[in-house]
Image 1 (cartoon, rainbow, N blue to C red):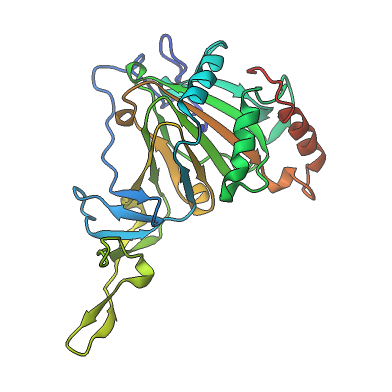
Image 2: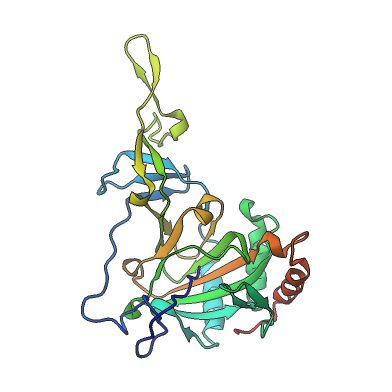
Length: 308
């Protein structure tokens, strides 16, 4: 999931960094560090649960807008996709990454868009897109752009906290995580607060959701809601663990309220990420740029593309 370009500065030798972005190829002897995440997202409950080593141990809150499917592709499918990608050039990108883009030519700042040299998504993605139909949150998902990103620990590859554009790209961001596990770190800049609830286990050892956070009090068995806690959103970070070959979808609050990032400490081996984006309402049926959207989708779904 790509980040916005910085406006100033230049790149270091052998890298594609600009402005405030940097990697191990262009940094001095003291690279920047990032702190640990406070919460970990649990796919089975939909809760962000406080890590034992954080000040929020024993607390949790609902974290909507995340879908994770493990083993979305097989080992053989993974190896075949990466082998096909490696036949094409990986171009230097920001923060120690390399990339391959399959999409229209866009100027996000001026909100200008044209097909340019876009010839469609690559042929190997046709099967991946078809498999997405089995995901409950991806009904009607039609990708119009694909970005392959290559992360390597020796380059200090990372991606800073950011929002993906929402003038052109629609609500759902879909990424396939290949070759190694990683962590998607979520952070929030809003001025509001998050209501935390104390966590406890039921008789089966399962974490109860906040809506059922009650306890019996006294001999008469009176049910009382456990006390909650308000913390500033800016103080909260959430880790979403992405196993190798897993698919993750961000939508709703996770898409529009929370920034996402991949930090260096979570790139321990080569990682390849394949991200798909859909069109926003402005470029779909009934939107201001419906015809251009149709043209771009027709190109994208031909699956005859090469990197632009």
